[in-house]
Image 1: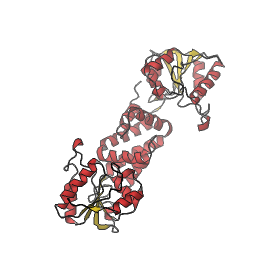
Image 2: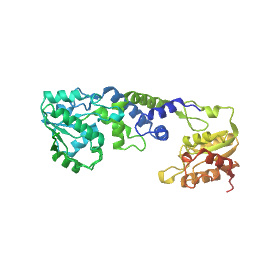
Image 3: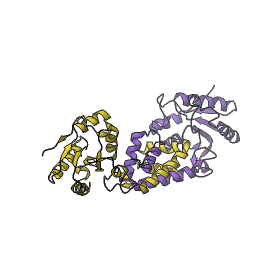
Image 4: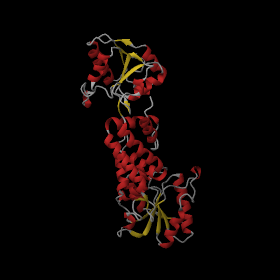
Length: 198
Length: 198
């Protein structure tokens, strides 16, 4: 009863977040029964992305280039640096069309319970960037416990270096996540950011 | 802002059932950020499975071989042929350890609304098999409207050919699906199958 390629596929699908044994089985059957072309396209896309997508040396976002298109753009305001947790948050702010500055993507948040401290976030790169190009830092981490802690930590760290730091307005519902909110609310929160004084 | 490999990956992930734009984004970020090895393994598994997994010429289940291991086994009772809708249903019956006969996997069910009629299910292969190897046919399609219709259609068709046809007992909840039920209930339903008289 061993069908190794099929078993392998089911096992491999479980590397996707939120996919358990039943979902993996359903996905494998679906692909083999109805969408082999899609399966091959997905295989190719995975292979290419995993091999070619790196981090932008300026904003730390995913990029195929050494410096991503957004950081390379001459139309952005270098006087503002918006710090977000994840690339999805950056996309949400871009879609809200309320901000024309630069970004820094943390690729995570401080979360001691998960073993993610200041060191794991490579904050020295952010600090170095702010020291080389002085600018206002806008903290746009989530309004969750971890996001708030991250913002507080960054504010303390950056203000000690003389950097002007603000936090997007708590127009978002408390406990909410940037990814889920509508563009209008998010735009309001960016406009109403307030300067932090520790 | 175009990151083509990343965009491609997000688009390709949507070929998976139940994966929308947000899930695809989350999956892509997760793989690139935390599990590139998993992404490459998944790519390889997809490629191999899509290229190598075919259908068993006897039971129609997915198989890398011309005849799958279960059909090739000499320990199975050739006097019984259990007809199921999907490979997952076959696995559930095997796990219930109540049946030692052969299988035929329809890879679907009659569903006129989705354009799936008797022709799309290639029932002529099932008919040919039963004519070449006379046996008792046990209908184990789901107890849904489509599954019942499929069972009724098959019973009429096969009985007209003089085949003895039974249906697994309605020990399953009405409207329930084989994949969701516990092994004990399923075993009971197989044991209490009743002969159909149209």
